[in-house]
Length: 390
Image (cartoon, rainbow, N blue to C red; front, side):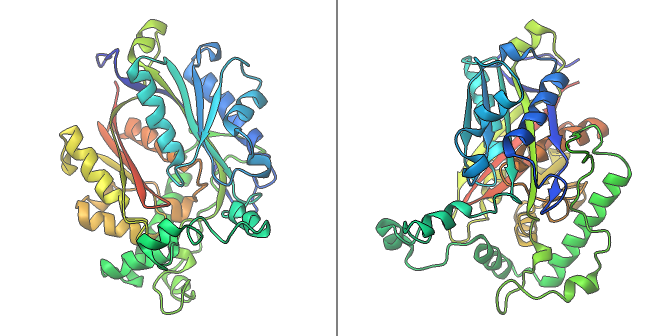
């Protein structure tokens, strides 16, 4: 058994819903109830007395309607869990729940907490991405968070601020062809379907509304079908097949201090080895995982060859492929069970969804180190290195 460092942060439990496709089996579930069912399962799986939880940190975007207020608090209470446990909701765009893990780990490493739940939730079917912007427009508050800012305009002019524009710029800068991206997308679907058929996700998933299988993978995808799709922008290389899917889901992990692990006789799954966060060009927007990975490796003292598994969120195929060219990782170690182009991307929940799956694969294969990174709106990225315990 690995020696437990009382000052370190450990993941002692994981849980996630299946990832529902847009309009699929999870579409009609209130976001608080979606998260609540995952939180209930997490507490049971971790063996942690919920009375001892110090905080609940959930990522969620478009906090409006059913996702309004502090959904971390609402979901915990909707699960029937102890009233004295507080909650906070955070928005670091697509990396929100990965950032929740960072905040949780920092809390237990500082000695100010023993147990923190970190996760996220998003029902993109019920509350489409960008709903808050649309409501603001209807209220006469402006079109978006950028165009009305004098400071932003002075710095960046009238350049488009869009993940789609950024993904196209990346494909152009790194000379990534449409055909190369389509092969990447096909491989993502193939790996995801193979993982589902092998039952690799079964133990991760909490059954909700009868849904126990990720709904996103398209088994009928072919190179010919992808080649027939129209680009998202005139003259562009990206199509809908080369982007992450709009999805619904929730996920969470229990983070504990080493001291609490020892005191309560818990069995940790993984140690939070290294964390990094960077800002990047907000116009390119999605290049942050490159610098975040470099920073994490440098801080950890590890080389890319030391990492056994990578999870790189497939916001777009161009993001993954540009990252691979700069980092030099072996793609056979990256997103081994498929990525967001196949499995989907419930934005607030994706960070801990990836982490749940990465930990399960690390345990299955005996991998010592796993690195996860996500690009994020505004030009940001998190990277987390986990070390298997056992």
